[in-house]
Image 1 (cartoon, rainbow, N blue to C red):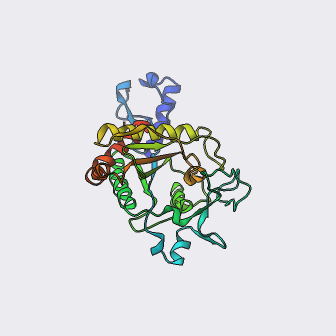
Image 2 (spheres, rainbow, N blue to C red):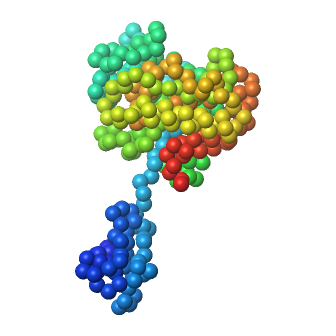
Image 3 (cartoon, rainbow, N blue to C red):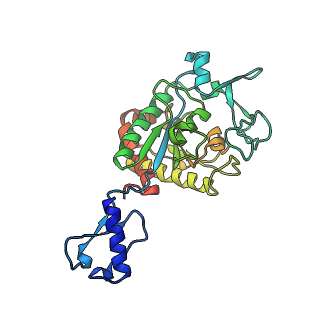
Length: 307
């Protein structure tokens, strides 16, 4: 309250050209509050204190998603329910790939959606499709390292899972909301999904977005932000670790990923090395801290929160 009174006094002195405050420039930025120093009859611009200690700029919130997780074979039926999966007769356990077009949190249930899916895929995404053996631990380690460096830079970081969890995509994206409350607007700035590749190959890339995503509330430049952020991070990984670039650094064959079709905020989707390549696996295991630092620096190069 004292500082508010000082601000009012300073403003009045400026408006009426009293004493030495006639040269005071009151900032239009609410985070830069000009306070007059009431320590004498005569005041000059040298007496003005710019004090933003009572105000903090909005923190950038990054959701880190260590891809995959605990084997679904080790989850009880209740665990699957708690993790956001559903059981559909004839389909088994899984989740719907889309929300109904123009909505958020209304599962498509096979109709009224974009219908986007990989070749031979459909609206249903079975839980078994997300199982991996080596990768989940690598992803989690890289996410923990990234979290450490982002927090040092001043970011707020939320992880979508612990080391022994296997949440659905719908469950993971709740981390984009304040306290996971999906009745509120999402407050996360971006969602960074950390994976490692397999199937023969080497090096790091990001999966690009393209086409139409119709979940409600996403920004008009949802695709552009996700791709630019993915490139910034992947470039940083290649520049700052022993990991090479996979091709030109962009993997454009899966724009229909469940996460792309459901996330309420822009997504950077990373495929860091090939864990079935012995050279890449050595890097993933031995340079996790460097990889995490590189991911954080790539995020910060885009958002500039620590500058």
